[in-house]
Image (tube, rainbow, N blue to C red):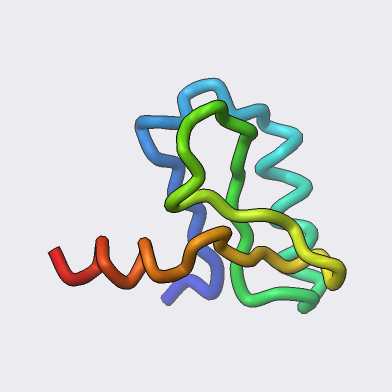
Length: 71
């Protein structure tokens, strides 16, 4: 059974191989349990997130995720 899995969504066809390699190295370092690629966008931020002071991520409006999961 694999210990790591890489899932690239069809919505990210232009992801760079170096981003994948960097994410894998961060995952292997034990600093985090998962990594994901993200980009800036100019749309409403209801499901957007930001990098916090500890280099983790926080949602701008976490209540929107909870609402989306109830659909």
